Length: 269
Ligand SMILES: NC(=O)c1ccc[n+]([C@@H]2O[C@H](COP(=O)([O-])OP(=O)(O)OC[C@H]3O[C@@H](n4cnc5c(N)ncnc54)[C@H](OP(=O)(O)O)[C@@H]3O)[C@@H](O)[C@H]2O)c1
Image 1 (cartoon, protein in one colour):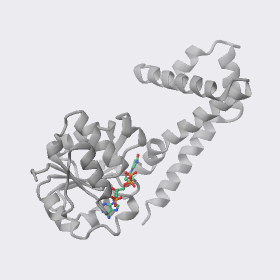
Image 2 (image 1 turned 120 degrees about the vertical axis):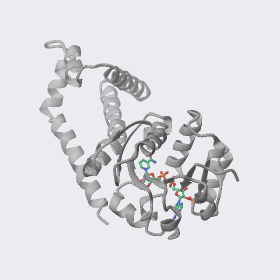
Image 3 (image 1 turned 60 degrees about the vertical axis):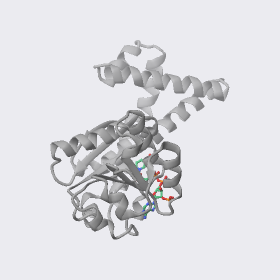
Image 4 (image 1 turned 45 degrees about the horizontal axis):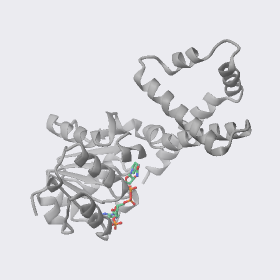
């Protein structure tokens, strides 16, 4: 086996998205990445599909890797191979385990060179993710470059203090679901107004997509762009009046606060 520079422990949906992004952007060659998983099933498949190495022997896998990406489910951490504590000594360990705090990761990987907790979201699967990360100790420049190269394969990234991670879990992790719900609600509105469902969904989706792109490219605030579309007494104004009367802003604020509270509860272990 060639000496891999990146080892993945867990090879499911998110790990697969990361590997595909890294290879597509030529950040790593297939020979520089190796993986394992609990049963070996997902890791073997990922290796077959992408050309990376499947290495079921944990000491061998980790011996050649400087950076370790831990990508199993959060609930699997308690039952993870205890040899990881020593095998990750001196290495940079990144975790994508939702809700697992740096202090908890430090128990599992006590001898790591540094630990990075990340919170990606599902658009990462198409390279359009938003990932927030925090590190146990200030990242050395070379380690920061490694972290950002890896996370860059998933889309955009930002470093924030760990105290914000519960909010990030709600705002970054859950926003795809909130947006899907919003598009479904727009579609239902179109259907209520007489459109066929498939047509209403296409119109809602493309409008959300185009408006999101416009906002992303613009230097203006969402409010400024909203005002540009809103003529006095016009169609948009009529709709916005209903949104205000039904407390849309308050509802979304409560949505994020509820998600933040729940993320906080789930990360207490
Ligand atoms: N999916 C997302 O968009 C997303 C977003 C944010 C965060 N996350 C985080 O990403 C992590 C993985 O999620 P996922 O959706 O990719 O999960 P998944 O598709 O279910 O994959 C889980 C992987 O972990 C492996 N595994 C389970 N227990 C293990 C153990 N003890 N040791 C080594 N490998 C083990 C599984 O191996 P086998 O099945 O082969 O046995 C499988 O490869 C989670 O912690 C989640 O919080 C995911």
